[in-house]
Amino acid sequence: MFIFALRRLFAAIPVFLVATFATFWGTSEVVDPTDNLATCQNCSQAAYDRIIELYELDKPVPARYASWLGDFATGDMGSATSQGERPVSEIFWERGRNTLLLALPAFGLLMILGTATGIYSALRQYSKGDYAITSISYLGLAMPTFFFGLLLQVVFAIWVPKYLGIKPFWSSGMHLESPLQFVRSVTLPVMTLMFVLLAGDSRFIRAAVLDIKSADYIRTARAKGVSERKVISKHLFRNAMIPAVTVWSLNASALLGGSIITETIFSWPGFGRLVIDALFAGDLDLTMAIVFAIIFLVIMFNLLADLLYGVLDPRIRYD
Amino acid sequence: MTDLIARPEANDDAVDAGDALGLSEKPESLGRQAWDRFRRHRLAIVGSVLLVLLAISFWVGPYFAQDFDEIDVLQRSQGPSRAHLFGTDDLGRDLLARTLRGGQYSLRIAILTAVIATSIGTLFGAIAGYFGGVVDSLVNFLVNVLLTIPLLMVLVIFGRQFGSRPNTVAILIAMLAWLRAARLVRAQVLQLKEMEFVQAARAAGAKSGRIIMRHLIPNLVGILLVEITLLAGTAIILESTLSFLSLGVQPPDTTLGTLIAEAKGSIDTRPSRVLIPGAIVTIIILSINFIGDALRDAVDPKSGIE
Image (cartoon, rainbow over all chains, first blue to last red; front, side, top):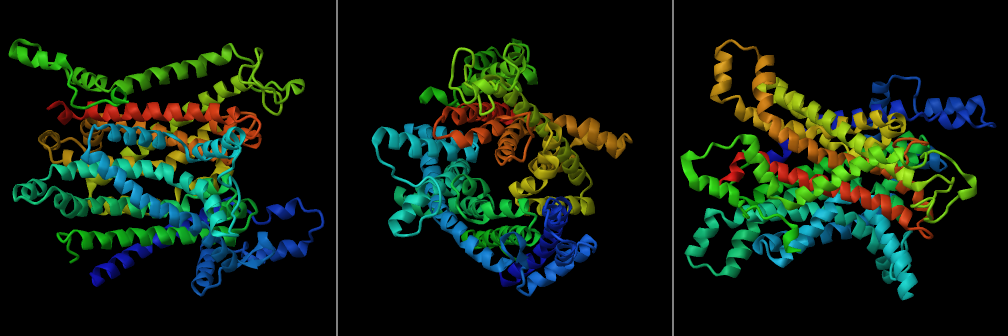
């Protein structure tokens, strides 16, 4: 298994390098750090030269990528020109923590709710509960994240205060003063992050469990006289974990990388918001640091999922 | 709730009756069988009707509505009235006309994206599956690379540069959305190429290009139709998301996502400006997904045997 992990890791390296180089190249083509200086009246030629030198804009892209990667590997993420030349690493960890504050609760809830609704729906196929879950899932799959977020704002920040006179949740900004404030500010963004993913997870796990339900080994277990509770908890649940791991690894990547919309709507100072701001400000180092981190995490989660398959399904052998 | 969701088992009586009559009955054509299976999904029928109605209003409506780009400063930020059914925006433009125009553009981009992305995916998938070996590995590598790059971020990075016109938005999204189609087609081609009719064609001296275009791809029409449909739904989500970040189609033109982005600022005072285009987007995608699911069932020959 260790050998397998190592081999997968080596296979991931070219994917990682090509993916980061492609984004680096694309970003360099699109983002021009000297843009801001063109409209600046007081900026001198010296400032212009400094930007050229800082990002090595006089060198070809592959050379720039190599030197950037070298710096990155030694822990130097560069400095963020859009934030008063603060070191990127400092901003990176601060914003990364904020994104995790949303992503972790969302991920935990997704694991529980996605599996629970998926399995329930499959075991009680065509029951009222299944219809309700299916209908909500279809709605979730059809609603763009930004619209669902705005809908939550309309309901909880406009209609509820107007008609009920209370404002249960913060509809914008991060509030960490007390645990209560944290929960109040995190609720709506977490719901927004979760909703679309939950719909997909629930459908996927439902389909997987429907397959498992009619599998031979379940019938065998029943025929042996295994109690219904044990059939579900030992035989069905364990096998349903395999497709669940697949969606979880996709969820984890999506939560970390796809929070752009949610963070924009709820003014949450995390990664997603940062990458857009950095991009518009022509801040190459900051943009690339985040994109780089996300590509890295996506690859790691895929690898983790591959390893977990082996733990869950003894038939999968790594040799 | 119960009758909202189609039950695949709820078999059409007509089909059973045909079977009961046995051999005397004229065999049903594949298209006819597919239509019978499609028809079972009541929601897909509702979705089709809704989509056609929306499309008609998006394309015909503007001839009867006001000019979507006519600025009337005296009528700024008005609520709904007889003259402006949906009210006006911050510049005094008629929101009904803008919604129709936006819907038209959103649908246009979605269809274009779906067709381009499916074509790219089919091409790559068919080539990878048919030739195998190094070509397959190369395509696989490309797919793996693109899968690790966060889609939305790439859209944001390039949307700034290329996202200004409807056709470029469609091409941009399609460049990133073809992966699923490629995988699907590759898997199908791997199976198909071992079948007798392909072997026969090869034995008769047909070249690879001819086999792919004349023998393999026609056999994929069913799943490609499904893929185009479902991709159109994805494309609308991506396009409206891009527009929401004001990186999509640029003013004065508009899409449903742009309308929502513009209305975001006045969400406190006039939530309806967000809710109407949002609801339209949701209805479009919901309809598309229902149609796609029903189509998948319809083109799958196995789903008829129950």
